[in-house]
Length: 312
Image 1 (cartoon, helix red, strand yellow):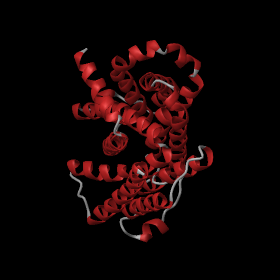
Image 2 (image 1 turned 90 degrees about the horizontal axis):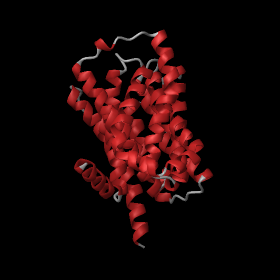
Image 3 (image 1 turned 180 degrees about the vertical axis):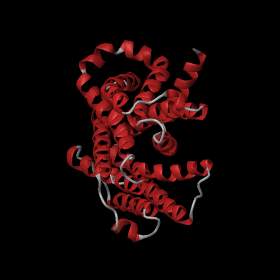
C-alpha cells in the first residue's frame, strides 16, 4: 500500500509538468519500437498485442481499481466513448503496426507514421477548432523535415523509390486511428476519471483482440517455449512502460495542451528509438544525429512559443 501511495504522489507531480509527460511517453514508445520490432519476428502480431494488454491490465489494476469502483456508474454511462478509446488507441494502433511490419519496410513504416502529427493538427483545427500560430506551424514543419531526413537516410532516392503495399496501407490506417484517439482524448478525456477510464480501455482492448488472437492461433500456431527469458523480460517491459505509463502520460499531456501541440512530440519517438538502438549494437549515424537536431528544434519552437504566449 505504501508503494501505491508513492506511485500516486509521483505521478501527480509529473502530471503537472505537461511537456515532461509527453517526453516520457515518446521515450517509452521509442523503447517499444526497438523491442517490439525484435519480438514480432518470433511472436505473431496479435499474440504480442494481446499479451501486452493483458499484462498492462494486470499491472495497472491495483493502482486504478479503487477509482474504478468509485466511478463505476460514470464508466458504464460513458461506455460508448470508452469503447472508441479502446478501438482506436489501445487495441487498434499498435496491433495494426505489428501486423503491417510483416509486409512493409521500416523505412516505409517510419515515413508514413511520421504524418501523424500533421494529421492530428489538421483534424484538431477543423473539428476541435484549435488555433495554431505561424511559428508553431514552422516548428512542426522543421520536425517533419527531420523525420524525412532520418528515414530517407539523407537521400531523396529512398523517397522517390518508395512503393506502397498492403503493409503501408495498414500503417496509414494505424495513423488515422491514433489521430482520432488523440482528438477524442482531448474532447472527452477531461470529463472522465483518467485512471478508471484507462483501466476500462485496457480491459476492453483485450476483449476486442481476443477473436483476432484465437484466429491467429489457428492460422499460425505458436509455442511459448520458443520465448527466451530475455524475450519474457522484453514483453514485461512493453506490458507496463509503453502500454501503461506512456498512455497515461500521453493522455494527460493531450488533455492539458491539446492534440495539435502534443502531436509534435511524436517525432521524438524516432530520436529515442535511435538512442535505444545503441544498446542492441546498432550505430547512431551522422544522418540520424542531424535529423534528431531538426526534430528536437521543431519541438522546442512549438513549446517555447506556447510558454511565451502563456507568460503574456
